[in-house]
Length: 164
Length: 184
Image (cartoon, rainbow over all chains, first blue to last red; front, side):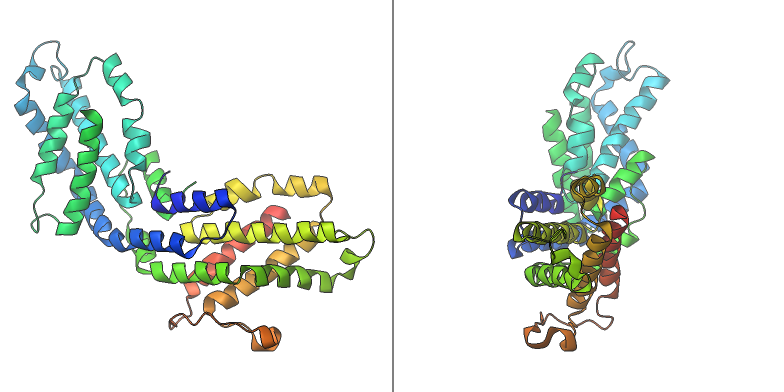
């Protein structure tokens, strides 16, 4: 799982040396930002159902054709699955906040997603709409501190970019 | 390879839940500087720690450097020093990451079988690791023994904490114990 620490350790191991002071500096940089990430992760974990529901509702409202017969949101089963997918992305973003890198999104969300969505004939613009809604929904200081919101939004941007 | 944070994520993912128990990770973050100082203490004293550990092991068992011993001739002694440094290096990685996976995957996996095949005595290896464990604790606490170090006494001089980084010392010791139990 890619994170600052594992990247540093992999590089040090490849060179066969002990962690150098520059290695320790990069880990410290990650640790300094960790407090904001933990705050965002904690808030997101506590409210993930509401966040995912809002994003899902917004994306269906923006793409009402999805409710038509034969479309991706037409039946109750499909609706539940769409909602689950949005929540899945939010959970991976929570993982990324904890890890301090995009490893979880890369490995469990993005890798192979293009093939899966094509095979299942799912449109990606509604995912982008849902994540973009979440991206613009956060408000400081109501929801999170400025630094925490920045970390959260940049991960949403990363997920949006991977889908568009 | 995992660190303390990705370990939490991987176990949360097994039940498709968010990471809810953030207390331990916040503690990790709060004690981040202690951890970095501890890794620095090991890395900065590594060569001294390794040579002392191997010398100590041999002092207690002179047969190792007599003909037929496993540290005789120089070529095998050099291999021994090299292995001591490798073990210490992976322990320092594990301490930096806060997780033993790098130590397990890249160092200990198959080490016992390799040593058995090469005829390296497990008890001597374990003794050298034990000495390094005691040294690591002394350096992380920044309390190297004045009686034993003599003129070579060297202190890091990093800011002292009231409990002398007891939790980091315990964690580092657990990684050394992991090496010992993997070898025996």
